[in-house]
Image (cartoon, rainbow, N blue to C red; front, top):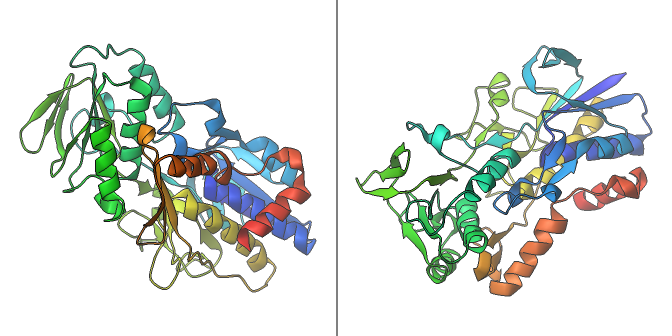
Length: 383
């Protein structure tokens, strides 16, 4: 029996498992065992965690894996060494490995950041924040002041959504080191962000970082302080530490550099996809830490693991089309095309597109449709 082990049950890992199972079925090689190891029972629809937490943001993995004939092991992978994955005392041998261990948001290296701060990095963190928000007296100047640190994609979506969740009386503040809120999203989008933040009465503080966090007060690098009991961090992601067990050749975010077929540099039998890998989408651009790239990357890596195991030619990953859709809460959303982010839809039209993305595009197929239909779906998505 030949075995493919996939680490991580996020977007890349789930798509890799489906794709590997589809490739196995297509070749008729029933002697290929596929195992998905994940420390969570669910695929977390992480791009939605800026919203109020709901159970539909979690998709159970076991029923889907059972339907497509993939072994599911709920465990945290701790070590990769010598053709084996160690996961909470169990050892899983592999002939091909697909690393899809994802990323996390590290809290800033300042005192009390993790103890007193909040995030929406995981479903548990999003629920913890939601429970905290439910205890606040919004009419109290301190309790009613919410500070979001980080004014890029997640921070903007979070702070605008909080206006919708908490109402007009909440005092919302977004803080960033950059000169303009949403600066990383480009010149076409940042004016729309500024307009939305203004209309939603969200205070913007730029060119500063958080210097100190104490119970009831946040102090910034310019020496100014804000009385608040709620500081939420949205300060970017770092790849899983498992990448360091495979290579020292990492980018600034800890991502593995990969060949065109998503094989890890220097590793003949290891592929990587999603937030742990930096791949070229086209001649001029590289992947970002987003489900938009993680899903097709996972699909290509899973299929290539099967092809490589069978001695067949692997396929290169490419994804020249790029789009973004930024939720602005009551101000709608902005949908863009291209790496220069040309605005295609805004306001209510953008919000309708965001709703479609958040409820349909980023979800895997239901196991209820059967394995054959699931395999058709993945083939079409990778075509």
